[in-house]
Image (tube, rainbow, N blue to C red; front, side, top):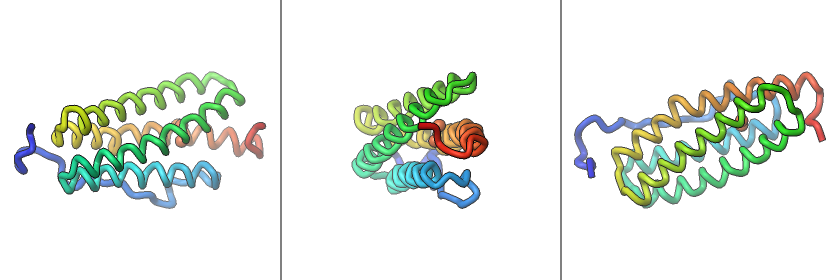
Length: 148
Ligand SMILES: [Fe+2]
Ligand SMILES: [Fe+2]
């Protein structure tokens, strides 16, 4: 299962919330903070080589992510514009990668594959999500309020 304690497993891939990750929108920032912390809990369980704990942490992360994406997607639909399609695609691809991580943990029980996929989320997808959200946050701030 590639779980021999050696090889090229990632060493302590973690992610931490920093104030600089905030966009100055309290609701969105609070959700992003929960998202980052939820993903770090998955990393921590994988680092401890505990697939059971990783599965529980991932279920929590998926709840947070699903709720957050649906809030933002409602907002994107209300605001319209051409940026929405790309933003929705980044959400969808992140959700797909997260589903592959769930399969690695719960079905394949592969620590090595789970570590690889978690690292993809930490190093690439969180950045892409925040990149899309930065543009959304700027539009909301320019409007002066969240559209009803
Ligand atoms: Fe987003
Ligand atoms: Fe977001």
